[in-house]
Image (cartoon, rainbow, N blue to C red; front, side, top):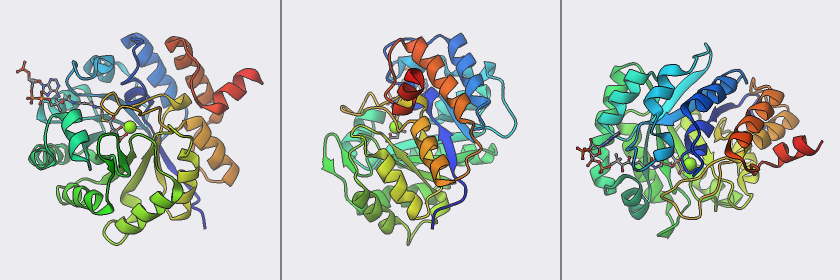
Length: 298
Ligand code: HMG
Ligand code: MG
């Protein structure tokens, strides 16, 4: 059967904006995140405490974190690559720290400038200190299906990275279809490989919708008992260090699916549409979500 409730994490302000050429001012980001806070979403990933030269679109993370209005019942998290990032994030205010690495050696190197084995000690320290500070920690694993440089990634490689992150103390694992290539049988195969080792309720699925497969993949994951997903309003997003990565699955589209299936999220669809239109106007381009286009033309 299908779950009765799903937890959605809105990653628009982070994954959604990180690849946009159009600068969104700190003022506009704050207004937008405050709008997102009122949608009923469970969690918002509001920025990244990474090197500003790597992700210039989010160089104002500290300012954003200090200025957003925190709504009770909403968890505010951010991407944290190392101890310096954690220090800034704790100062700016986070409920959750998201560490990240890749199951593919080449993508890991391009994205965070380290081999996989060099990454573990860095993340282990960050996870330990974030837990000591009372934060929820999520470990993102990128390229769990395919890598833009190495092609198909094996379930064993993904298991290895997931095991290390769990041993280091992460509360959740977020499995990233970074370039949006997976089809439902790949999702089934990966989840079947992970289920003997990791409880379902610790697994989050993070789909990019490059080829329009994300909704089919989410449906498969729902049938297998997964209840946590990442998405972005309007389908914004992409990883600048993964050529070919398009936007995340749109929150609007996931919500349309979940509402239709009778699955509870606590999210108000109209407010999601308003937040989509707001950022669409600021970016000056039409976002990929079919549901936003439908609303505009209705
Ligand atoms: P590095 O150059 O190896 O870092 O970068 P370093 O430790 O050697 O330090 C070099 C300089 O950077 C030093 O400054 C540090 O202080 C500074 P200097 O002494 O030379 O003046 N520095 C920092 N400054 C600000 N904030 C920091 C920070 N750390 C060091 N946190 C690093 C390593 C990880 C920092 C870099 O490679 C980086 O920032 N990478 C981030 C890339 C990124 O954000 N990618 C996109 C997010 S991941 C993603 O989108 C995938 C996901 O969505 C899931 C999926 O879809 O698969 C999560
Ligand atoms: Mg992503």
